[in-house]
Image 1 (cartoon, rainbow, N blue to C red):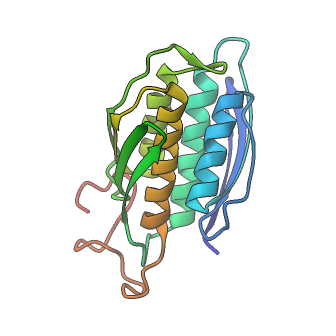
Image 2 (cartoon, helix red, strand yellow; image 1 turned 180 degrees about the vertical axis):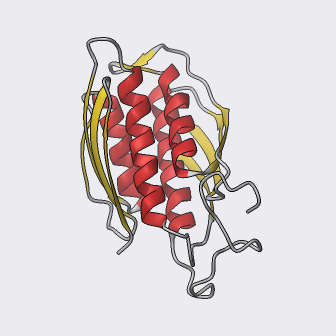
Length: 202
């Protein structure tokens, strides 16, 4: 089983996270931000990556550190679970419809972290979560996991549908990318023979 676990403690947050890439989409999420919990649960269920995530953050200040650090820790756990990335499909993409909304997510577990974000919201919060933090969450997980990540809202009006469609699309793209391809055997999916975090040659 490809698993990873991270314990991350700073003056702003204390985080425990564990993932199983070969799971069934089981989750136990408690970040202190209800809407973020809901989105990470969606990620776990639709990616089939088991996720346990516990965060004790400085929410008396604001949500920024909790949102950012939870994504960093989750990305680091995924990176750890991937190991040398031998045999993975590497690429994943998904169109994600939710009622009137359609989102597109494409990614490459490349070792070259990058986020292209083409989405926006018409209200400042969903539940108690600041909508401006969603882009930052995806930026942080892409950086920590070494993912080239492209997210685009093709159309949509309802803010809840927009972000939930994006998270579900990210989940389905990740499911495709982390799955083992039996035709690849034990090979690293790169002509360079290496796919590591920050590897600019891969």
